[in-house]
Image 1 (tube, rainbow, N blue to C red):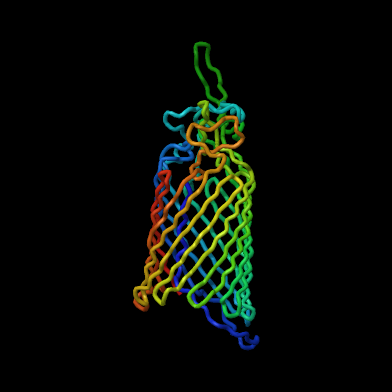
Image 2: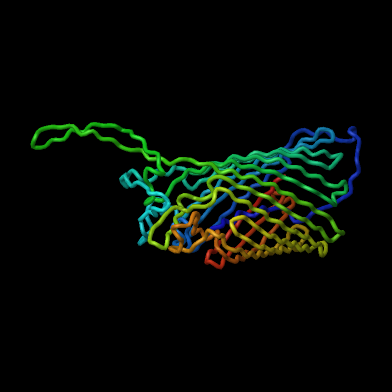
Length: 439
């Protein structure tokens, strides 16, 4: 399942003006202050019948609630403007398929594929089951970013740090960015480099747990006295604690963008990204069922190269109407190719209210490692039945409502955004989010 992340909600009018260089004495000094606060709350639900945990078959039903608080603090020291962005996101997810990590899907084989390495089944079911954290389903993601803008040169450099925690996944990342705009703001070039260092706990599905993929330690030594016809004797009891190893995944990306105002009505942007991943790129609890009646965990290469390029066009048809067009081509070395096109049309109904219908279409080819349920070749080196890697087309459409309430509410603006997502493999989803901006 390719999760549809909650859209970034923002104002829909861009302004371009002329600027003249000033001497240092002409710039103001301003204390650090909270310039803007954004609160975004979203609800996401999906359904389908190709669960990756169950080997490409079974319910994909999932619900997620997310809340994000974003603060922007600004301080000006002569010609340098310092901006600090602090962001905290909290999400909770419930999924019908996750229960099948700790139990076998009904009617499915439990015979491990020996071609991938025998698992020694010497643990009792009580020992083999995982004890999920009380934070199961929760995700916490703080982020901080510091930008320094040289107002005399219209140039900005920035640093950022990320952290994300889930019960079986931890991520730590950083970024460095550079933006240079022309003095009239009609031209801009930006470059951003990011690196993420993640750790995943390698929890396999129930029937594939054994000493090859678990860490077994003894604990709770005890003595129990038994009585039989020969008298008393002592039985030493040893209970086992089972845990699973953690492995690394590293991701590096470089994002470049160039935008140009063509005329008073037209703005063009060119986007290019380069991303490289290494380490554990498969999810150990995703099953793959083979054509010989055996099962094993998903297995994918330990490197991946991804290169998307795109174009964005904004056409201002008038003071009340904008056309926003976007196209992207995606390539990776796992064999996936994708074309995505979208159109969004913000329409200003009144000076304080606008509506923005939008539509996005995407067509994707399958990775060379994908197989349907029960069709994988056990002799292959890599295999997956995750339908996120399959061939499909998708449609996403919805509506954004933007309100500037004026003086009768404490908010500077309110956005309400709804979208419906549908894939040709049967996955469908609904996403609704509301954003409040305070200034």
